[in-house]
Image (cartoon, rainbow, N blue to C red; front, side, top):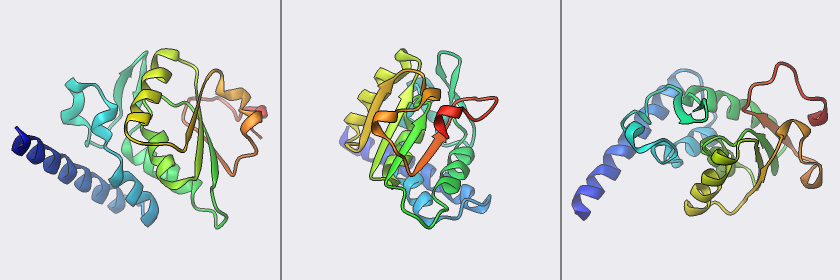
Length: 171
């Protein structure tokens, strides 16, 4: 059984490496972002029935009419956030979802504060991220569009949830 598990882990890592290589070819070139994407096991952030698709460059359903973002979008958004020459020590993420983007951010920032409005997504995401060993993340259930003033100021803000305009409370 251990041999099978080891083989499966190796196959998953190869699939993750292929995905990251494809993202690099599409323009995600920041080495730190690529390393973060390579480090986060995306298959653990999707339902068991969809794990075979985890390393496709596509969004997948996570429940509550929400999706885990397409890896290319995660890469591009993360690269844009970390393109500044100033350090991103503290990042606010609006829309935790399943926690995949949160994990990528946590690989790069000293502290990530993440807000999710759907409790049935927030609680499992928090448990998942804690079980994966992320200790630099703070979690909140609520409306992320009002920010998280008590934890700010932030070096960067990532809004992964749909917004028709930039929420004034975040500026």
